[in-house]
Image (cartoon, rainbow over all chains, first blue to last red; front, side):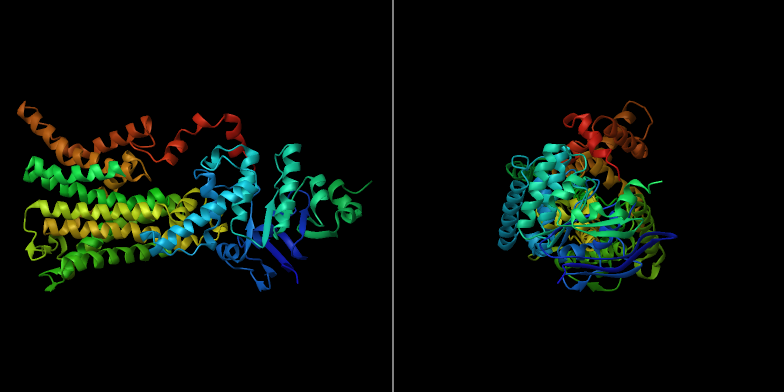
Length: 253
Length: 341
């Protein structure tokens, strides 16, 4: 069964249809990319999945239950994590605190535990801190845990955002243009990191403009143009699709 | 930790060294304001919610105590029970105000809280049958500690307030280093990203409002029982502004900073300005500096903003935030702030 299933999803903003009758599925354990020209509605699809918008029409099912119209925090707790196109870290919190915050939904300490620092609360804090350190290690951010997210170099901030998203142990990880602004070396590392994340059992769904990266890692590609799905398939199939070539390069005259 | 313990010992010994009723009275009042500042710090400093009507919760706490421990209705619930009841009532009003308004952000929230801060004292003023109107409620019960009445000397009230401050500091510190504290800071930094971490932003913000308000309930009980009187004019906008100034001057978000800020403002208000006025009168300069206290607060705030925007004893965050250029190269800064949205 698909981990994520969008059926007939439409999102209108006033007279503008940002996403039109979109249907597609993501199988668990895969790496799927979504591409499309600027303004095609890719980020809107992410915002629909994470509950920032409730779709005008259609259904979104995650892990067997409907999440359309659910609050962002509940969707996150259900196992959807994301990064943002324009990095949205907690700028003036340490790298470690950023990742620990990512574990919020999995923590159990109540208000009373927090007030009294009960033994259970202390144990949980220790456990969460250890796991956060481990995640910083996974994304290659050893040695900067006490630095403010704000003070990290751009490439490291992107990695920190991924570590923070992984902290909630998501089933589905949404990456919004993870390679934006990265140099070739950083992109190679990123490809390696995304593969390792998938090997941990996390399904990855990414928006990306860098076609080399998309071709290298994704098993399936969905192409969006003017809010509509115009193609879907393996990277090779999509690349040869005349509709895709038309959307990117225009109609030959 | 050692510093904190030393400060507390000093605070305990201080009134015994000076043995001056006026001074002890000042210390007790300043202590009540430290409590208020610690409470507002949770709302503004930790969670980043600008509350301009914090005095309303102080009023609610004080009136709750006054109505339940005075001849007004003939109800005389023991002080120690009312400490919990009054802070509970203040917290409840924190939730009642918060629930409809916390969807608002930044300036909009500030305006609504400003309105609330005006409405509450007006309500107490006009509900004369319940609150005694402009005269307020008098002859409030005194706390009784193991059979000993607190009486009219300020000293026992001062120690009571000191104990409440210790509890408040412990609560604030514990909360900051917890799941809830991180959630508050995450909301302060980026509310949308916080929601994506599975943080229920509504209940988390309500918790900040409720806990912040409960501190002012404690302060209200202690302050009202010491003064033996509550009246609507004690809880005006000037109180909200004074407490907020304490935070700004001391260092928002940082507990020692907030305490120092509130002590500085209180000393200025109740010790330094009256003394200076006396001095000026002695040399036949007829100026009453206490009348221009708000002018002086204003000057202090402007000077703070110009020369030390992070406050006297800032938290690490605030310092970094306001001196960001010092440790981030300008290139990195453009990358961070200039990213397309």
